[in-house]
Length: 195
Length: 195
DNA sequence: CTTGAAACTGAACGATCGTTCTTTTATGTA
DNA sequence: TACATAAAAGAACGATCGTTCAGTTTCAAG
Image (cartoon, each protein chain N blue to C red):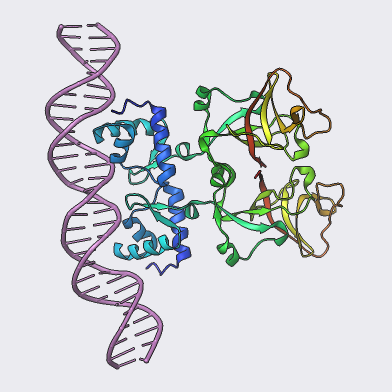
């Protein structure tokens, strides 16, 4: 006989189902997940999960998960604070990297870094840069730019003489675009994955 | 009168709906999305979307989106290749950062980097490190470790004399744990978001 | 033109969805 | 113990889901 679950276990069961199936369970399926024998018992749990922000109701009153339910990572404090106890883990907010990093999906791209011109900015060859197209670069932003027919990653800087593209590598010199300058997009994030 | 949509437009409409509502539309809703007047017309489209890998059917024959539909970013080539034409953009594979970076959600945490001990490895203060708990560190992995009561980020190295923790900063010296060593987890990725 | 295949329409159907209602059980308070 | 409140069980209901079927339209090949 399935024993009584607490909220945390129910959320975990829901999360597992959602990750596995890609959709919310029906009331009948939740009845099974939560160990109830009546669908009506599920309604109460759903109400509480809506109140606590794990679920929300859409336009037609339809159930949908919030990012709090679908997120895959826990955000903790600083490295210096080390790892939390299991209880503290439970408290930590779940977060979605997609949601955190990508603001405008239709205008966002990932590019692979090839050179070492931004090495002193902590951007190494092989890293991925998350680039947002169509954003106006501010002074000091890192941009993907086409200068004189070549695409590169540089700091975008504006001074009295005009626009300057600075590498983050003492081995290279700043560039002042002569013929043409196209700013493809602004680097919003850097992602490095270890194999 | 809504004109005929091609596959790409339908996928885009589905993606928008899924992102907005957090769930798949019903056949009736898809009928509206795709501009049909009969639900039966939707069935054909769904069959084709399943065949092309945008949708899949779960255990009970229920419709679920694939990651190809729900992903939020396009993965392009190298920075040097620059930006693709809209047609090439369309070809690029959509990808989910969550899926790409997080292998075991229940064991993965994000920590904020505080010191500069790994600066030469391209890990700066303020960066986020994606740490996986319970993974056995291999030689050269970056780990979050507690040495003599302090948590730090270091290279994990094993040599004839035992375990050594190396910083990536010439200003600091390698550490040989004296009293205790706890490896909290292995760094699987580094994420830097520009404000 | 005729023919055939595919796509679409429109109506209908059984299944199942989420909700509602009443009854039963569990739990805490005086 | 008695009582009040909340949670869960169990049955029932209308709504809507995805599917099916027969008929129509579209369009390209012969």
